[in-house]
Figure 1 (cartoon, rainbow, N blue to C red):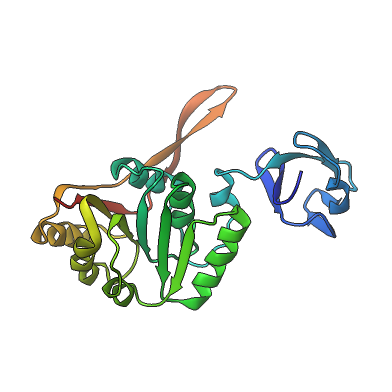
Figure 2: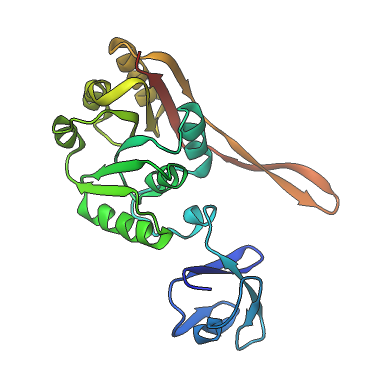
Length: 246
């Protein structure tokens, strides 16, 4: 067993990158040296006797444990983009607006034989994303710090998918049309419905087809001894617009 690993107790979990030093938790202090020689499924205890299970670091842990700068897309939205754009494991993907790298990481994970080119204008966000990619062990992501439109102007390859999560998404749409393969998809994420409408109209002007605009809601259930009911928390995050190049 090698790091990174996850220490989990009910709804509390910690990402461990090194088996050295101490981890201070609300349940006591863990000596991380004790993880050496352990196996997945084993347990370690804090100085207060509280037990944590040792689990492998997996895809579902990206969202829980990635370091964050910009607000990331949630898994429900990432999943929709993967499914609705027919992502295959040998795709070439252009990701404009890396942020913390959440979307790029999930795309790269499912795109094991392909590549993801991700572009971020802000250096501080790009550095956070770089650390997240390293933790996840993703080697098929190529990072560029700069303006996505400028980067796209210098590209000669054609992409299977272009995803945009950036402020200047409207000026980029003609660029996306140029760098996409015939049959390729564009997916644009926006936090505001008015912006999503403008994107939809711009995609139509640029002759993208199979247009779809939607939001994905996640509604949790409260499961208690007396019964089960819908939680008052409804997870809305943003709007996704998808089009295809013919």
